[in-house]
Length: 246
Image (tube, rainbow, N blue to C red; front, side, top):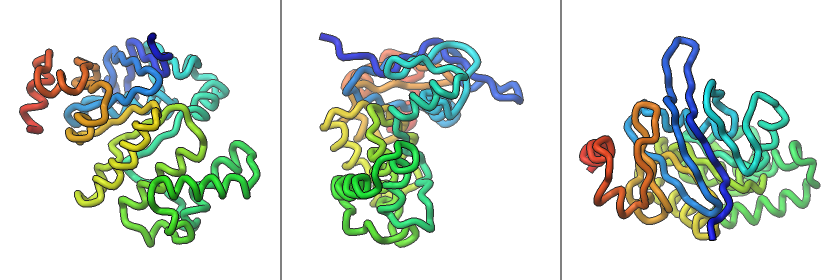
């Protein structure tokens, strides 16, 4: 039995005002509970593509359906999608003047109008889940980069999303901090969270991904299970990319 389709992007094309075409008919389907890792060279459109899924980037052609909602210019539809989709960026984007707990609890109280005490209890549980509950009353500037990124993940989870998007979540981290963030993401995957991850972390993709997608020149040129993608890729661009990162 096929699990429900959570993201379906078809023929997505995007131009910037300067005339540069960033996406050239990009396609991707993501089913409930899947972890899809998007890899590819710099400038291939990976981050642009994933940011179209929740309306952070607009697009001019094609279609995107997220959890049954068709993405359009309608602000209500964009808001509805963003309520279902959490996102973690390269930079942590935490409020420096708020404590860790306040950062995590802020959006559900303001956006979803949930009781503050209830949200703070959930925030503490989520901080425990990502291994930093003991840092709840510190400020972001007192934490390491890996700890700040785990706070950012907890913040997204506090909105109770059905889908999580990760845009190169470890690229701004020192090497020794990368593994602690990937471990949290691995735990989310085990719990069945639907995830799309832009990353160059080959080990994570091999161990955690349901499928790996390669992007090049604004297109998804190959999607395959990790074992096939890393040992017997079917597209020349995939072979070329893997030879460069191997």
